[in-house]
Amino acid sequence: MTTELDARLNAYRSDLADRRLEGQVDAPRFVEGLPMRVKIPLARLRGKPGFSASTVASPLMGEDVLIFDRADGWAWAQSEMDGYVGYAPLADFGPRGADPTHRVDALRAHIYPEPDLKTRPETWAPLGARLTLLATGARNRFRALEQGGWIYEQHVCEVADLAEDWVAVAERFVGAPYLWGGDAVDGIDCSGLMQTAMEVAGLKCPRDSDMQSALGEAISIDGPVRRGDLMFWKGHVGVMLDAETLLHANAWRMAVAREPLAEARARIEEQGGGPVTAARRLS
Image (cartoon, rainbow, N blue to C red; front, side, top):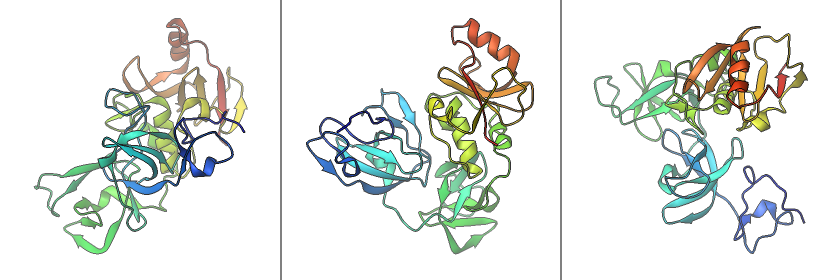
């Protein structure tokens, strides 16, 4: 029996584990995951229960999760989108309803109590969030949500309506603040930017940069590079907008920014981040 599974992507602890891992890990108790769904703009999964713990991933509204444990108001959950495991307040999740029909196509979309832009929004949904819209609920260019509330119809598209250019999606985040473990316009990190943009285009992408470094095929780290190529440092990733310009969420600017690749390489190495470790081409 092995216990060498990646704990980021497999729900197992010393006291219990996902029943699907029985025979692969040692645990005194194996449990079935309780199917739930993120009901707030995004649920910040943390490495341990408690708001002081670092965020490791941020499943978006409408994403399905499995909950393996509940204690003191916290849930130990696993995203069914990318498999990431972490802790979040139990109140962040609700029962699964009908399958999502639409996804948010704006960086940030308000959800209103009435189909009236002058009312105060009740909450919001980030780009890529999945929603179930009522077929008969349309008024004043707003659409009614199964969960309650109204969303502007031009801020959503059908789930199957995928973006054609994931790099263009990533570029829409320019200026968004950097946030460790973030996946939305209110705060996003380097690998979250790659994952969010690719998912909107229908491309499967793991959460962390070390996992993303296995995407596509290896190319020379010294070029030539082209739009869509991924550049990796230890613990960091960015995407090329063209042969010379890198787009990345970075802690130097604390924002998503465009930057000449040559300048980024020199600065990151000078500051102790090391050299480029890999370059990958998706197609």
